[in-house]
Image (tube, rainbow, N blue to C red; front, side, top):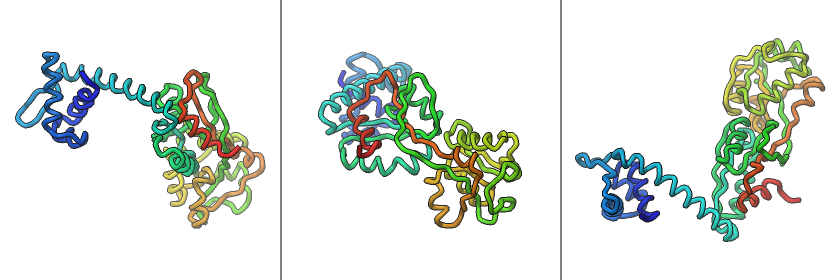
Length: 299
């Protein structure tokens, strides 16, 4: 049994089609069929039902698919380790980032990294701060980048940048004064907010608490799971919002949103850090170290 045979079997099993698997693997249909037949013959086990012109996994095939994927995953891990030793000629870094970081801050740094290391690929998962911390903690990704504070016993945390949040609203939105917002203003206004678990939401809640209020005191029209959705709802007149200045820079320049002034106690709470997260018990790959060097920027 070879790794090539396993890759062919998995491709056919996932597509339930020999021709499509052959096309995706850049092999002939006869080569794919022969590889599957050789596996079945060697182990005297039928892996697929041949029904008319179609195929479907047998029970043995379904069980074998789990093991085949596991073997291929381990082989990929071994290959990645050897690629590390080859001086970053090849490699991969799995990253998860919260939305403000992923959408507005990280892309130029990924471009710089890929330009410097074209043989190293990067995969990026996007979610809120809680999601990113869980991905790093579970070892699913090597590096996490978030804008919310994280307290997790398995995670090492490093500040890599600073950010500033700003309260915004559509120009002319009723009930929004042209002066620094007081606690009474904050209570009386309508708001659009990020979902619980996001770093942006956590800072918004801290701002509200600094004004002597609770979230229950606020008239929240919508809770939405992305900066883009919150920004669009605010620009449509749904209410005021608190978002990263990076996320609203274009809307402020275009005049679809305007920045709101806040009294000093609440304004000071809208500064935050972007944080890099690593698993304390997992050694960083050379590719991951190189990506972190790019993210940190020049010394």
